[in-house]
Image 1: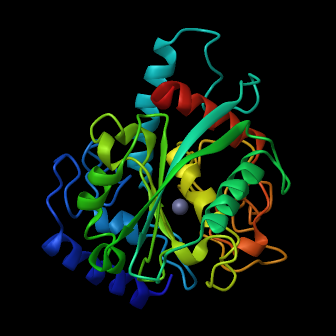
Image 2 (image 1 turned 30 degrees about the vertical axis):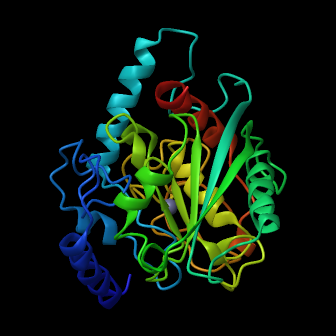
Length: 322
Ligand SMILES: [Zn+2]
């Protein structure tokens, strides 16, 4: 991490807190990034510290990092819910492949936020994005079939230069107006995102307290055929939807602790930049999972989810979105 980059990010967070819109649904404060667990999990870490932790030199993709304490709190709650469902209803959230889950089919409402011609992505590009999600989660690029598929239900288009120019600031405005469906419906927003970010998401355990804010936002130019070099195969949406279904980054907790709670993704100390031919940053066995969708590698480097991630997706779905 470059200290300067982290400082810049911390500085960038201050205006968001100052100018944030007041959302009709008040449980996500204007300075709280979606998915951030500072409110519910009493971890005691200031949000900015956790968010800035894995700033990289390349595209940071998002700020969906949890501190070890935040992740531990999420896992305790998840396991309580799953244990409450009784034996046979789920596999261990830490293990891989105990249960062959049924297919999850997710209806998608796609919301295009644009400024005139800028960001007004074509229907064909949206279809390609949905297709990319299906290929990614079906194991079509490599790795495991996560048994998750996506069906486009409708597209909305909103010409709003203010929203397009600062979707983080206006998130509490556009989401409640555009959001459709319930906890098992994916609302996917495309817009411009500044600061080299490629997207962000909400975690499933946030749905109950703030259903209108549920969803995934991606940079329109990260969609298949978009203009962001090395990040234009549509895997930003794949990555963010992974968070939306409860996956952590593969570098969660670094080399120590419990990592991403998936047994078949080797621990890695920090996010991957580019596409290294060899990277092994932790003493535990296994090279870093640089080709995994939940790392920060180039889109051109990403190929796969693991069976353990598929199992976690289905367990979290059972607990929070089924
Ligand atoms: Zn992420």
